[in-house]
Length: 528
Image 1 (cartoon, one colour):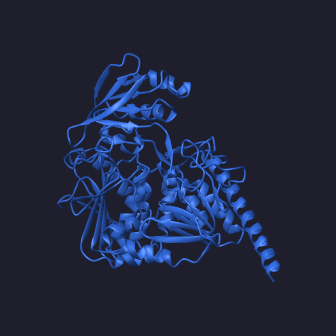
Image 2: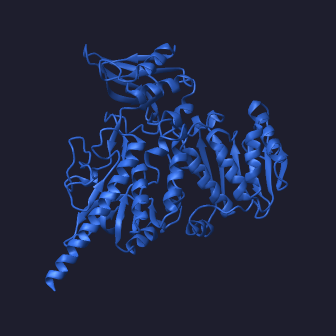
Image 3: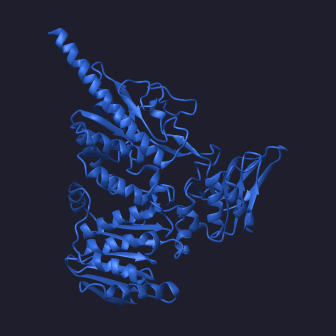
């Protein structure tokens, strides 16, 4: 199962085990079961701390792989083969079960340890989903910390009957004690907010106690990371307020144009950025969203946080990024997560053998269609314009595939469903005016991005598209407030450009702070 290079790397990691770990192979019949048995056998010989047992009798999902701590008698399971994006989840599960320290806030560890009651989590994933491992790893850590918490990863492609019975149409989908708990990427802190009564209030109380920042960065993507690093290196008090650290990177699969790095993945780059920021004295406040911005009489900038807290700073750098643009047609919100999706890499495997549509004929839309064509029965691409806007090389690839149909001059008008899931869509032919219908099981929306600036309307100058207007230093129309990244009028929405703009805005803000201090000093001297 594992090649020699991977075995050597894994063996070096397993040297960190402090206590024995038992791998349990819950086997059945079939190819997947054979592969799990082979994977367990490969890992067995890599450390003297690894023990192996085969189980063909216990009433559990099969095939599956259990990871048990013999020290504290905890077990978490992988129902399906934990390879692809989930191989890292398996490695971390083994290390944490064997006593290797977790790289998370000690306060969160203590909060998990003190949770009362029994919590049985199940997470349905696809091995091509780049967001799923974060959720799996968070719940695995909870299961290792607290014996009354259990967690099982379930490969939706392998357990298709369960996916259909539970109406799972997007991943990751988390169930708690048999009931739907969460859908989409969710952090450990956010999980605790949902299961630990009072956790959200305590988190907001901690924000209320924060002293005034010199620079507060709002956002957690590449622009925000660069700004935080540049600000911290200047020796000023720096904070980062982010709903989720990583931003759009967490939804990006392959990155091949980040200078000096030939190829990487979004979540990996996001983790590296967070680690870099954490290496400086930066106060990272994740899991919170900014709700308002204003300037007090003394020039201090106030950022209201959803839930009731307010943060104060002498300068602010806005890097709120963007989100997927929605179709805004009847049925879209009703069937979101029940056939309407925005991430083909994550949710595509759930539509294996079915017909789907991709809305949008740009690069992202045609790339999605090509990826989906290898999984689903048929892909219908609907483009509003009279021609596709994707690169010619992508168009040629799509047209060469036998199960992709491209329709231009198509305006989607309604998402159709049966009350539980998507059954089709309606569109209008913009040339003839005729209304037409397509029967399908899934709709993947790929029509661009919308800046996350709703809370800034009326506060600072925005473009007609809602983008923050900035100058060459990243300054906005409001003194002391700077901005960078996809939320701004920057014409090119690229990672490397966002990072450069974040650094520029941080330096602009630092220059603003210096000049403000000098002016304040002059005013004090005159007053004296």
